[in-house]
Image 1 (cartoon, rainbow, N blue to C red):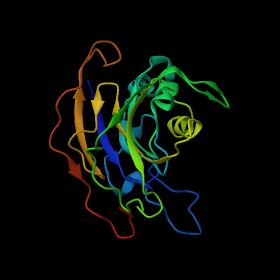
Image 2 (image 1 turned 90 degrees about the horizontal axis):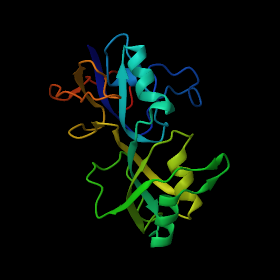
Image 3 (image 1 turned 60 degrees about the horizontal axis):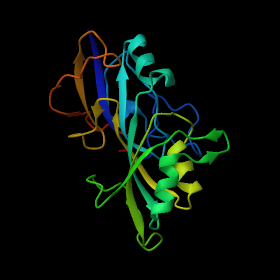
Image 4 (image 1 turned 180 degrees about the vertical axis):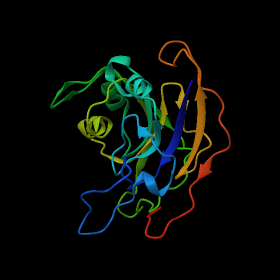
Length: 212
């Protein structure tokens, strides 16, 4: 039996518990600002400027099963892009595009009428980005900044990226900075297990100096 923590990582937060580098001497927000469970580590990561679902656990084998590309956990993102992609651009994403590190595998892509997400803090400036489109993109790879590179390749740079699902686990019900716990029973979800229903979302109280 293992315990998995589902966290909604906010925008401009590191996917780690400490900030060794800093920017201009200013401490950046870390996971320690929103979750205080000892001995857990992220299964994978999200970039500093990306948001959404991050899984954490104290079970090294489970972390490996979730994060290693060999296990091919599909990852779903809601992506706000510049402009209005036409059908040809979406079809190119579905078929795979040629990036600097090779062709991407086919992705599932669809337009969204609305994101269904809370507004980002800070929000996008509509004067700089008057026309945008929300897409839902599911990939089975984990290349560096892959979704952003894919949308830029077809002429529509990503402005906001939120991961909403990893395999069977979903972001549903979690506001930015909130988390919930799920208890997993063998076999693990990479075979035929399914995630359980955890308690209500939790948010760590704000700490002095933490960015939310």
